[in-house]
Image 1 (cartoon, rainbow, N blue to C red):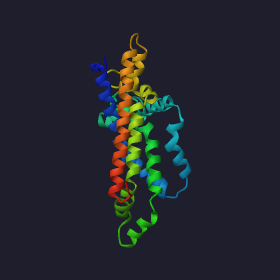
Image 2: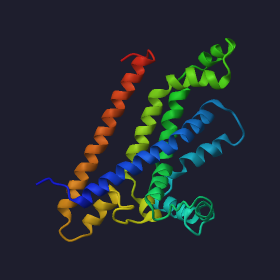
Image 3: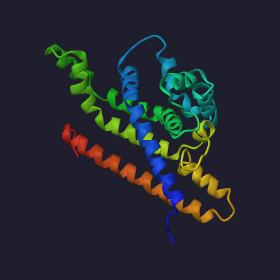
Length: 232
């Protein structure tokens, strides 16, 4: 019988919370970086682009270890955050959100960048000739037209966060009720005698949540395209 246990529900709620926080936290920076890469010309642009996409090509365990070195309680950033704000990331769900944001960030930036590049730059230039400040023309012309790509990037980041395992388990481990998300719960179930049924249930849940997120993304993108006059 398909019935989730209390621990399964805890892992599901934690996964959704971590994925949402990771996506919302990464989105403003992703829009800024994508805009910079799409519109600006500056020395070292290729290097910045490579650094942004580095988490995609590095082993996730390496990314998690680097996060642990930097944001652990003895790391330079982690020690400063704890002493200044009382914020601890290592072995906490907030650290899982950070790891997921880092892993999903390149996917979000790429989707947004492609969407911004597809917007005719002359439209913003025309708004500027009518007296609109650059930031205002960007916010009222470029960004609304690029909104389908922004939504696509956000959903990609959310889906990546739901499935992230290597960086998360390296940085925050797999602590029940605190950092044990769906992927780590599935792994723990496969390592437990008789845990195959639980692993299968959680796998089906993960697939269902991912499909629902993608369907919602497509629906929102269609609504946005109609709103900005891009067609159905």
